[in-house]
Length: 289
Length: 290
Image 1 (cartoon, rainbow over the protein chains, first blue to last red):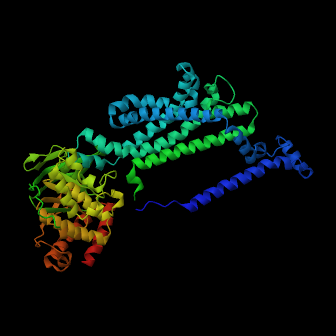
Image 2: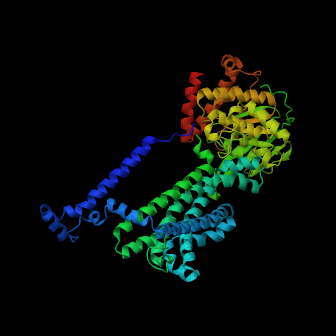
Image 3: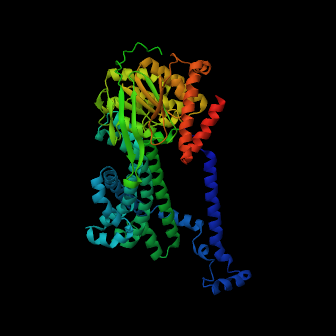
């Protein structure tokens, strides 16, 4: 029952694995200079015969080394435009995600508890659900007045379907005995909804949100790349992390591409962690055993 | 047990009469009759135990008594009035635990009064009394997953009793507990019953549990279920497990019940039921031991 102590062993393992990954990456990346050596001429010919660039090891050799990435990062970290990208992507993810929760949770609960709502709402929902959020990009650019809104809308779609499906599934899988017990003890329908259905669905809402959050980051980055990130001024400033990556690619700054990728990884990790902690906080009965 | 002076609401015990009840599941030719022309009475203030092979339709009968479902034919009367639906006057303690996992012990116990808007000082006092009674005072703020199996059943008993039902219906409540805990729970539950004098209806597949607890023992046939025999277990209360082992009357009742159960199982066995085959085997072992 005591809270689990901070696990220093797990932390050490995690750090070790990241370190090994960085070292392998560095070696792989540096191999592009080694491969020019005379000893590797046969290997170069073989690569060329297979259709690869002779001067690189396939894949890894073409990627900038972590040391170069760190240097590039050091440069952009003082650039306000880089932080502006963080902020813009974060705001889009946050906005789309909260809108998805705000609409998705009540909608999912309605589908779960009301046969009428299910009959009317579910077919349309199921018809729209297979359409990938990114397929909505052109339509939403046309439909929404500003580019910002169209990106937020696509982000919203990314989380919305997952949240709704989880809420419906969660509410439906509540043990029938809980309803019978509540009914026997004199609960009204509203009381059962508030004290049985809502808390009973909460764990599924948390899971659905965590998955939805992940999809939101995937979607926002792609949407920013496609739409040009809402940046009218060009350059790396103000377009979100997806646009930051795309812009770095166009500008030929390959180190910055990797900086952008890692930034998204970190941003996604932070938002999942926040969500996980909040989820644990609102479902205390799942963490105390 | 120091709080025995707490003024508890007066228990009004009910009596249930089951008259010619039948219940089938499934459509048309796939329909299967689970309960057939069932007749029995759950007498006022007594502890009636129903025993029968598993899958014989006991749980169906409980759903009918609780009002979650309705019979196809016949009627079920509580003190002469037909049952119209679930109600606090017939509370069910379910197989395994049906405590709300998102509520602490204390919130679970107070569920009923809060649901009916009766959360007053008297209810709180009664809840406190019951919490002590079931020995969970230290576990007031724990969630069900933090309680042991036996504690969960006791919490559930308290959650039912606070509603002061006219009848408590228990559907194999101690199933899945280990042997030691189970025997403790028998004595514990028998003690609660003896103090309250409330009508209790207890369903089980365990013959030792049945004989130890019962005032009246209803032995059911296999599916479609009916009452095959009624045995009055006239062993004086309070009962202790140790006394029951040596009691001639208790052993006689057990032998009588086993003989009937065995016969019942043989009948369905000869009709080619696999469940009955397991049953025959299980009870043959038991009788040999007894």
